Image 1: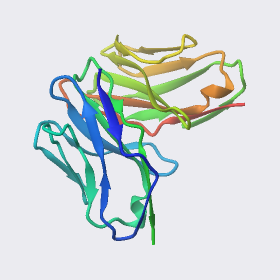
Image 2: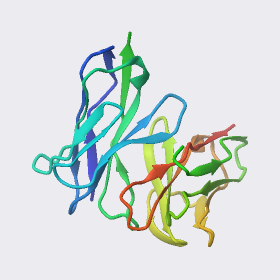
Image 3: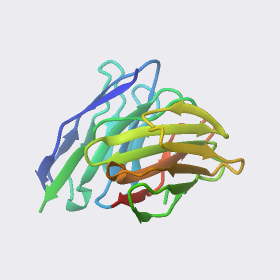
Length: 113
Length: 112
């Protein structure tokens, strides 16, 4: 079955630091890959996605590239802000309409000024 | 705003009671998913419907049931509630042939 392995947290960084949150996956076929973000006390928001190999998803300064050869989808941001403090979830789905979205365990990110 | 609407946003109820959580998917979306998020278990998939039919089932307890109605809204029924059912319940939807799943803001359930 599908699975997502996500970098263990929590992660604490200083403002303007470079961020990488690792995500690797196991899946059948050619899954679509996602990063969702959950800010404190809020719901899940789609941050970015990629639907085929070598696609790069980007949003709000965050980027992630779909690497089929390494089955990875690492999240990166060049300069984090205090407002980026949240829990980040990597997720995948192989077959829309017939299958669940499989999540990683989430990585809690705290940015200190 | 994702376009997925969940009600109620917050609910406090006693053990042994029954509650219904409601979800309205984005306009045109046929798939609805339910997830449970608790502190110790992370995001757990419960069940998925597509145009009224059950398509995938996860770790949904027998005390829980769900359905998707002809107008595509969905309800999650939780009965004989226990303290451990306290969690954030998410609904999500995706369009036919689509490649993105959008989540609502969740329903916070507290069982006391």
